[in-house]
Length: 298
Image (cartoon, rainbow, N blue to C red; front, side, top):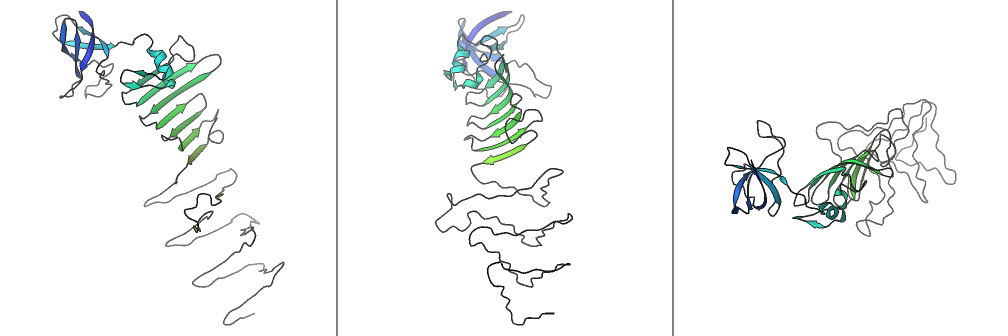
């Protein structure tokens, strides 16, 4: 079997069969090389990563064969250092997190694939007596990330700016996202949750409170006269709105606690107040006014 070192000259593959052209001393014009995958199924599923133009590769021609086959790309000395420093290597700009030697210097503990455009898959078993970074990470060329991190105990989904994220913590560590077994959703823009042709339930089961809070102060209002800042709106377009406290001795409290705060009840029909044990209407500092076309006191 003949084995040679060659340079990839062309990887245009019109028939999509995993062929590329590589040149070496005896064939400066290049030979066609068949790609060899570590895993392929009978229905052509598997792994494929054809080397880029300019890559130095190892190719072979088996005994009694006229075809050349791809054996692998050659990793030059110093490439790992370039990876760790974020230098340009080949066709792509790499990032420090890809450094496989970071934790223990001479023992590679990260396994990664990075495309020429910057899409990355990282499998990290990195650890040392002083640090641990065990995770699986998928990152797009624009910086969108999905990270499954065992070292800090969470799953993180982030957009390219880092201003929108979902964090799911595990039962043991829960370093981010509000404690163990928690889910946190955060963004600098709008959050939209829609259910079509079905229902939506928000429940707290054997826990504590359900809080809905708007702390907006008007800094990001749409205009000087924007009246929506700080509002909380509950609206039904075609049905009832029901507030029910089912526990014993429970209360439904309406409180406009700010200076000049008012509570207004308006209906196109009738407003009914009914207390089985009584109805109390009082004002600690003002009048109680009742007006209407007719007033009936029974």
